[in-house]
Image 1 (cartoon, helix red, strand yellow):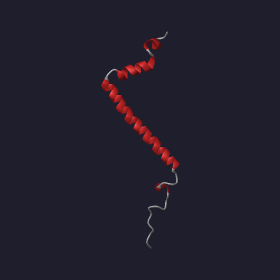
Image 2 (cartoon, helix red, strand yellow; image 1 turned 30 degrees about the vertical axis):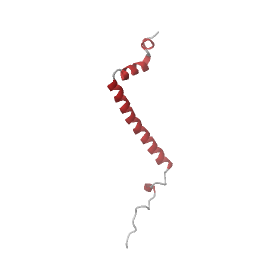
Image 3 (cartoon, rainbow, N blue to C red; image 1 turned 45 degrees about the vertical axis):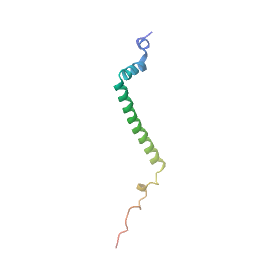
Image 4 (cartoon, helix red, strand yellow; image 1 turned 30 degrees about the horizontal axis):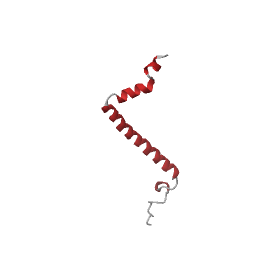
Amino acid sequence: MDTAARSGGIWEGIYKVIMRRNSVYVTFVVLGAFAGERVVDYGVHKLWEFNNIGKRYEDIPVLGQRQSEE
């Protein structure tokens, strides 16, 4: 039996590092929630842009342009 199997493996090691102190656990949860929110927000934004190509205000060249007065 190797050393990793006897010590519980990598997942148990990560669990022990994160769960050892309450402050580390709370920090991990808060930073994880923040990072997860950023990832989901970025993904939804890119999906929305992909599904609306050609329909956005920026994609229509005549909008926002004034007629020149001559």
